Image (tube, rainbow, N blue to C red; front, side):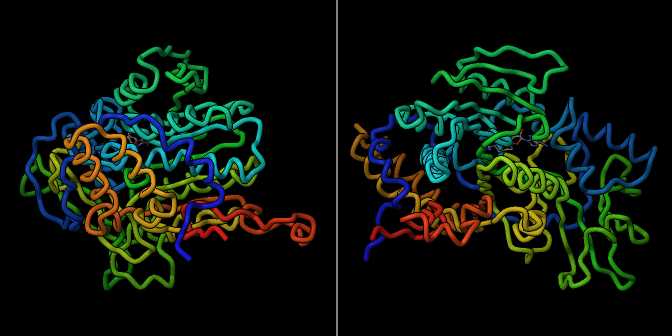
Length: 443
Ligand code: SAH
């Protein structure tokens, strides 16, 4: 039988007439990662480099995680702290097309319906960038407002960058926001253009508990990693130090002996010679797992990554080109592939996980082709149609984002396995399948 629209998403036809959002033309993706190696580099990183050189002189080498944290989120000079938009150095799916956000919005609605339509729902986005993904999700919620009429919906954004939070406020509320006092968990609040309350936080721990959908699109790859190298003397941690040959430049060195991190993060059965671990991602998954186990909801993580197989994936991007990770910290995006096997392990069996599956498969299962047809039919001129086809190719082509990006979900166990045997006897229908993660057939 030909694959049809997922049963839970029969609500979609109403959403097919959604208005479009104009996008800038999609820029080329940066080349695929090639490890950073241990090349020395030239100076010129301005504030962050100066700050790091002083710190290194005073206290000695830094872990790669400390280096990455400073380069990306240093309060004054970090890459994300200073930037007001994305697009200059890398391009992400929500910036390319409205399709991923719309389909993620439908995924949330589909899961909300499967949970029996709880009376309140929080949408929590981690690292929202320009706010494009949430904007697209909100358009779907507005279009399907009748479905949500009895649901108290609120938006919660976790964003460390003051500049990007301003960009998000502009996109989502038209700039109508107010700052909160320091003792409140949210640092800013506003009302979306569609009338939904929005709150901004510095960390997930500040977001109120409750039935929630957590969405993290290209967020986990920006969290700091530790790097380890197998040597003849055992595992050593890769550190960042001043290059003795050029005192205004940085280089990688190995820790002289094992460190607490090598003891804690390397599994005895590890077969690779080089390993990257992101403990912040682990802590985040543990927090999400506890919340979802307690309050229900789900998390949807979309990123590039692997299942515990890759080695050196740490890389920098600047102006859509690979950039030496140790050069001019604070001026380039630094990123490392997400290790989905580690995320699964950190969920510690508290919740169920689905995926990772390739972006093109997830979007296909969510009905991207049907939505695309409607957008093409509704587009008035050939330039818009060309733009739509170009962005579809970017999202779905296996050589572009199609195979490189993956979707991974966290769900309560009872969503996949009925808690009691009686369920099957009592309920007439089996649990509805989770949209997006399988090729769903209408029988
Ligand atoms: N999700 C967006 C943007 C990805 S870029 C998209 O796909 O287009 C990463 C985002 O995470 C930025 O908004 C950045 O400011 C934010 N970010 C990075 N590190 C963070 C941290 N430690 N805490 C909160 N936000 C962070």
